[in-house]
Length: 262
Image (tube, rainbow, N blue to C red; front, side, top):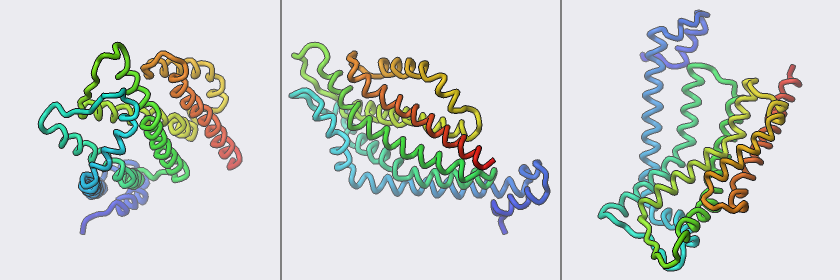
């Protein structure tokens, strides 16, 4: 009978010795559990890939809709290589499959780590839920707001006599980097929440460095946004600044809850 992760944890707890974590029986149990979870994650990704590829045409129309509205008159998306259209649809399907499989991946990641090192659900689960919500918000903000602005600026910059023909593969690669980058940029409250739960930052520390954060945020916005006007830069800087202020509130709530529990 194969050892299970639960048996391995009981073995480690019963011995009272940290070296029990590396006991051969416990190690084999964890490796077997990891193999099972990786198999489930890969099967979930494959199922999502098949599902998304079946509707990749509809997904393509949804993804390029903001771009087409931002392009100048007469601009068009073209394929410059023979397999480019198929590759783009495959990338779109994989992109959607990752989003569909992400909850399953996160669940198995949490379960596996909890099996090796028990996590505090009050610490991990709120950070996980907040991270997913903010990532989706950042991706939506990049898709509907910033990406069309960037595409319009780049395709209308310079001479108006240039006829714009964009490779669909290059455009989609740029789109993925842009959307994923915005999703990552919206993780500021999640990082601060984890750091505050680990007692590495305090609300006073965050407030004291607010003026430096404002300078850094607007500098990053000036670098990332292609247009030189303040309106476009503020579209990126103000949400990031609002997320930092939200981080201060979350840190204060964590500290208040800790004081109340004490």
